[in-house]
Amino acid sequence: MEFFHMYNKKRKAIFFDIDGTLLASGEGIHESVRDALKKVRNHGHQIFIATGRAWCCLPEELQDVELDGLIASAGSDIWFHGQNVYRQSLSPELIEHTCQILKEMDAVYLLEGFDRIYVSEKAQRILLGKEVLPSDNPELVRWKKYFRQKTNLCPIEEWTPDGEKVPKITFMLFQKEQVEKVKEIMSEHFHVVFFPAAYDDFWNGELISRTADKGTAIQKAAELLHIGIEDTIAFGDSMNDYEMIEKAGCGVVMANGDEYLKTIADRICESVQEDGVVRELERMHLI
Image (cartoon, rainbow, N blue to C red; front, side, top):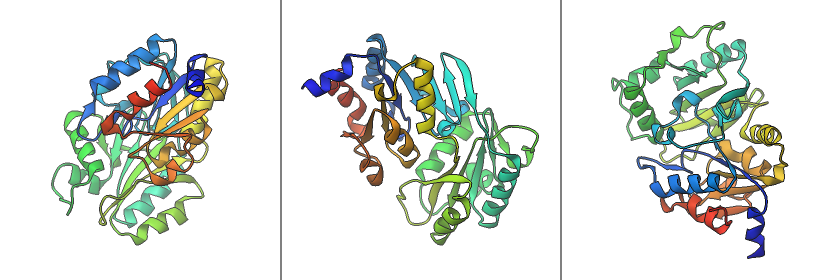
């Protein structure tokens, strides 16, 4: 019991991934989670969202949750008390080269800018329902829902090298042999993250800058707060959380999380469907 009480002795900065951590697919944020975040903050701790999503793609369910900061675009975009304090983007030349490779693979891909999302031609057809996949893809279901609600999705033809800055590229492949090819070609310039495949006919992934990730971002946030990295706690579930879970003073992985990610976790909590975040915060005596 003494081990858990140590978390409550000093002010902590706590970082929460969104999808698969705070939000269960198709369920939104549970009221118990919303209440827990409020209690943590009322007890003097700082709370941050740390997501792979661009800040312009944050779910409406979280818009009324009071935060101290936000890490978006998988670490490339950092906000602190409503002010943007750090941004890093990919070079236009690298973006153009990567788009050409993904286009040749007939992949679905999106350039996730800070303010707008640029959608490839194939992605446009799928999001508009003009092209149907053989299986329901949870990532595409989310994008279709977003596409119906938002106006900041643009055809990729509207992106120009001297225009919108782009920190991250999201993609989807439809041939298994392309997975290793992407890793081989892209790893020199990107952290290549693939999400666990629920089906055998598509593979979702992200291309993230090699010099900006969630781990580096929580280090920057700790410096802004004038606390040591040992006073940070991170909750996540997927491989774009790897550096954050590894770097944090305490890295917590959800039971529904990636199996490899669990191997580096300090703690594993219940699944997002079981309110794992709430239960772990209770065990840490933070609420």
